[in-house]
Image (cartoon, rainbow, N blue to C red; front, side):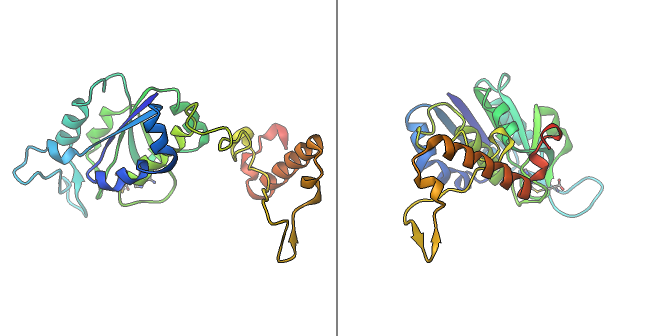
Length: 227
Ligand code: SAH
């Protein structure tokens, strides 16, 4: 069971993701839980402001420390939880990071917005994560990407038929090409080997295809020793 807490100014952006499909089922089965916290509610300012102009001048608004700190410390068990800041300046997220995160039982994700955070917010967290070298308007999509990818690694969240040890990035390989009915679509036929019923040969073919595909598309995934 992993508990996720998300600090966000826009809970309504995040909530639909767990009202359907696999994450909803995971919550119903008590395999994960997700709680959203709007840190605007912790603002002590007259108009519930959470940001202000940057010291030293410049464009944009910067999120202030107090509402984020007060919201964070209101969460039960926050001291022992893994606290993660969403920021394009963090470690680049990938499947290996997801596999590390799934070892935790309580993860708190802090989403920024506007221009970013007061630098001192960094002192509240254990790690900073970026989901890629591009800038989004807020940390909600990054937090959702992390919750989704970590949750599907929690045992029981995926049913057998959904979980794939052949998923891309398992064993540093991309998944092999998959086919389903019809056999012939506009003249494009399914490779005969897949209809042969010879599972040993099929496994061999698939591993070869995985390797070929990884080499073509993502040579960076192949370890030096395997090149
Ligand atoms: N001015 C900041 C970017 C602010 S973007 C800078 O240059 O670093 C606003 C917020 O969106 C960030 O605080 C962060 O929470 C989130 N965000 C944007 N892009 C992101 C990314 N690639 N990964 C993780 N979070 C991101």
